[in-house]
Each structure stands twice: as structure tokens, then as C-alpha cells.
Picture (cartoon, helix red, strand yellow):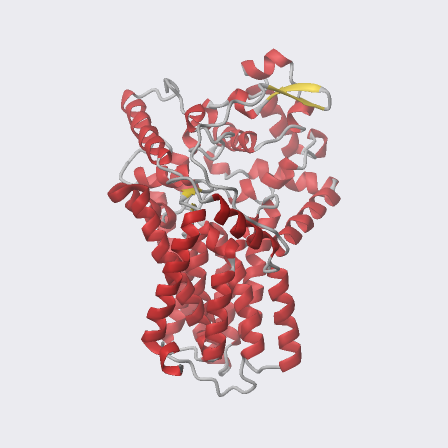
Length: 523
């Protein structure tokens, strides 16, 4: 049995098992659209454009997910993309086993089995988004963290830094993992001078590629940034959703309020309903958040880097800290203890339009669908789109683009994205299987909190000398979740990719050797 589960033979068996598991799950969950799929495709389709129509997409997004999802769609459509995602899932499962291998064969097998039964994690690989790719790449990253702690060779440290950069270019919140990767170089055993050298190696391997990418953005799009919009998301996006912004809070809040009254409330949809500033600020939505980002770029200048939005947020938090703190705590709690299952997958016509008018504190306000599509946010992709009906988010006559060439390009891009979107979901899911998987996914106690408790108990009980490895993995995951909690409302997709890493921390705490004599296998 030992020889079947070790070495390349074990890798092939595990990979094949994962492929079969994915194929069974695909019967219930055929490939479907995920979060921000349309914008990732827009990014990919504009990579060769010198003056992209959707310029903001190119600097708000990062390149890895667009390439991984766009290339298969170009070559073979959604069927090929599903096959690619199947292979990535299987590679991810093998990656989690590899990450746990330094803790022994039993730990590797246990981690692989846990990863296979984590149905929320598996569900990500049936949705086109950045979630599945981030979750798959975390497996080798975690393995390199473990190896860097046990045996910090130059090759491992460089690999850790480079993969940290790749994670950041997959999901910008991965930037906090640069701190963890650098810390790993410091805490691994060795003299003080060796630790400083290791810190420099990891930092250079992680930061230099990101600086090169930011430089490329500066050359192509006049924006020296890895991913634009940090100040617009953290903490403005959450503060806006809390409905606590008030022009009386300070000068930045007054500037933003004046811009809203001048450039938003004078628009026909708002003027017709006599919407005032108070009602507008009490009826936030994703659409309005993007509108205010676009307003900031236009009225305050792109060079301001959303400082007015950022300062407005801090003025609001200083005056009313409790709502923001409570919201961050609630979101973080949700990330640690969520229940998740995919909705039944079914090919069906777009949903009917919603109401044109909503009432906020008894006052009328146009619904997001009533003001869609939104000319001010035309260059920001589909992130603001308030409906799953893509046609309602596309301009039939894109006159807001003054150049005829840009108008033609707009039509070409939106036609291609519309075509790709029409291929998803691939088919109807098997209802009986989807119901079973959905129940298991929601009911099994596999949320991060469970694994973190097991990891804490294991570390205290066994007192393994390899404790920095599971501790570092747990801290890394918590840091990423905390950054998301600062800006987002509860959404399980931010936490699910990290769940196997918390599980790995638990397995490492339970199986970690009690001495420093651990050797790191090459397989």
C-alpha cells in the first residue's frame, strides 16, 4: 500500500481521482458564470488594444484570471474552459497533498481527502471567476511556505516570492501575502545575517515582478499601479453601504456631497423623482459605488487616486466608528463560519426587469436597473451591472464614445462577451445530485473556524517544534480575510479559496514532528 501512495504513482492516482470527482460534480454543477466573468473577458479581449475602450478594466483588474479563462474560450469555448478548470482542480488537490507532505505521508493523505470533500471549495471550480484560480494557486504557495520554514533554500525562497506575486496578479488582496512570505524568511532557523538575506531574497522575488507589472501599466495606461482602486474599496465601499456618510463630517465629505448634487442628482432619473442628497446616500448599491468612482476620476482627477473617497470614509468612521467596526466584525465572523451551496444550475431566459422606483425612508429613488446602463461608468466594464441580463447593461447606441473607431470596438467587445456569456451554463444540472451535494455542502462543518480551532488545539497539545508552519498558514489566511472584511459585505467566495489552507494548518498541527529533524521530500 505504501508504494502505491508515495512518489509519482501516488500523484497520478490522486490526480485521476480528482478528475473523476470533478466529472461527477459537473453533472450537478455544469460550468456557469461566476463573479465578474464579463470583466475578466473584457480585460483579455483588450490586451492588444493600445487605447482600450474599457480603460478602467485594464487597471482595476489583474492579468492571470483573464488569461486562464479567456484563452480557452477563444480556442474552444465553454466546453474547453470546463476541461481546463477540471485539470486545474485536480492539480490543486495534488498541490494540497504536496503542501502537507513534509509532515508525513499520513498528513498528505489526510489533507488530500479533506480537500476532496470540501464541497464549497470544489464548487468554485464550476464558476468562471478568480476564486477557483486563487484557491488552486494557494496550494503550492502553502507548500513553499512549509518548505521555506523547514529548509529555506534559495530555490524555495525565490519560488515563494514569485508565486506570491502570481497570487497578487490573480487577486489583488494577495498583496498582504507578501508580508507573510517575507516573515517566513525571518522566522526560519538560522543566524541573524542568514535571516536578513532570506528576507531580501523573498522580498525581491515578490516585489520586483509587481513593480515591473506596475511599470507596464504606467507605460500602456499611464497608471503606475498593480491594481487601481485600493482607496476606493478600502474602506469606502463598505462605508457607503452602511449609509453613514454625511457632509457635516468634514471637508472631504462636503466635496463629495457637492459633486453628487452637481453631477448625479441633476440627471433626469433623479431629477424627475426629486431625489435629494440624504435619500441618495441612504440608497447605496454596487452601481452607485462605481458611479462615484467614475465621478472621482472625472471631477477630482485620476491622479487624486480616490483620495476624496478615502478621506470621506475616514471622516465618517471618526464620527460614527461603531457601525463600521460592527460591520467589519460581522463580515469577518461570516468569513470564519459560513454555510455555502451552489444554487441549482439551469439554462433559462434572463430575469424580468425589477421595479423602476424604490422607496428609501418613504422617499422615491430610481432603482439600479432603472439607471442601467450608466454612461458615466461605461469604461469601467460590467462590475456595476445590477442584473444578470447582460443586454440591459450594454448600450445599443454607444454615443458616449466620440470616436467612431471606439464605438465600433465597443460593439465588437460587447458582442463577444455576450456570445461567451450565452454559452453558460453549459447545460441544466442533474437536480437530484445537485440537491444532495447542496445539502452536504451547506451542512458539513467545514468552515475555517472548525479548522482553526483544531489547529490551535493541536499546537497546544502536541507542542510541535514545527509550529511556525501551521501558525504562518493560519495567519496568512486570516490577514487576507481581514483585508476583505475592511471593504466588503459578507460573501463566502472570499473565504472559500482559503479553507483548504486552514485545513492544512490543522493537519500540520496534528501531524507535525516534535523535533526539528524533519526532512522535506522532493515529491
